[in-house]
Length: 263
Ligand SMILES: O=C(CO)COP(=O)(O)O
Image (cartoon, rainbow, N blue to C red; front, side, top):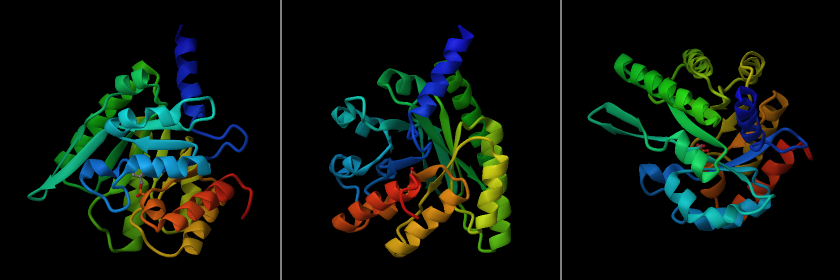
């Protein structure tokens, strides 16, 4: 029985990655949980437009999961990752909690849950996050749902070396808490990314952050990350905050670079 349960988590995890290349192009459209977002006024339209261009998985909240279900019918449809938390800041204090449990993902046929790990916050908040993620990992294990953890620094760290140290600590903590996938910020140094790939024995995917730069720089960054061993991207705003045609071009180029068809 234990073997069967373990296998089910491995199968769900494998559904996030292309069977041939082992890599993945994930499209996050979960930003609306923080309020209106430019480019994501109609997430369903974004999904209808971009999924056919080669998306392997979509990251979304439960409401969009309910409204978009028919886009995921069929054997060739992308996998779905359910965002399981949200946060807001009030008078400098961060409130961060779970809003969707692994059981919901299980019942909905999603393949993974995703949670943020903010680091470099006051000790009580860091501790709250650690406790919350530990509970989520325990519950996800019971449901055999993989957990994607996204280690982030919320407060800006201007010094590059200090930032790398804090991000490496945060990623390490996410790994220790039981991440099946790490969704990481590019640390700013190729060698550091390579070291992360070497020491964290789970797949790493790279997030994008706010819209910045041109398409060529973005594609070059993704290409280098994949060459460092990163298994794909989970990039949202740098895709769908661009003009429609450009966003579609970026999506096509992601699939080519991530799956090694061009470089
Ligand atoms: O996955 C993400 C949000 O859940 C990352 O999105 P961005 O690329 O917009 O930072």
